[in-house]
Image 1 (tube, rainbow, N blue to C red):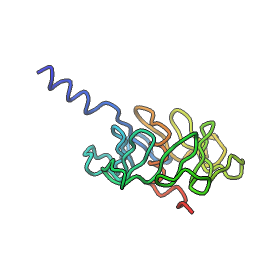
Image 2 (image 1 turned 90 degrees about the vertical axis):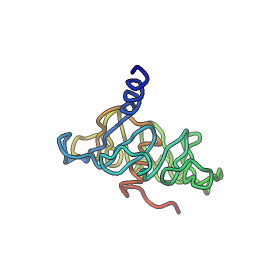
Image 3 (image 1 turned 30 degrees about the vertical axis):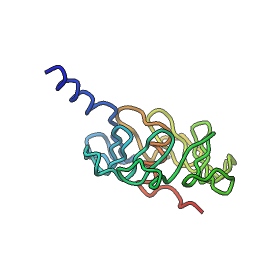
Length: 157
């Protein structure tokens, strides 16, 4: 009985619902983050993952295979695949902001985030809020994977 209870508690642990700004918590979530799995809607089945975040990498679908690795975070830079050159930098994450490419120039700021919200550009004004998180706060790569799943990030060049 204790093992069953622990299993159920683990199943509901590390669960975050992502809502669009104009929706509130009574409306369905657009993304569920569950133990690193980025799942469309409020589904909790891991095999329905659009992306999986494991460590500092984002993988395609339910996989954590090196062959399905899409992006890797290292020293605040998100690299495409397994690349580590300046040409492979897709995004830069610094001071709770996501910048396009290998830049921290204010005009290259795509999003800023805090403990519960993601905002458009270099703003944290209430009317610039795009997403909010209900539940456990996601890490940086889970935020990137969520934005990617919602089609809110530019394709790597």
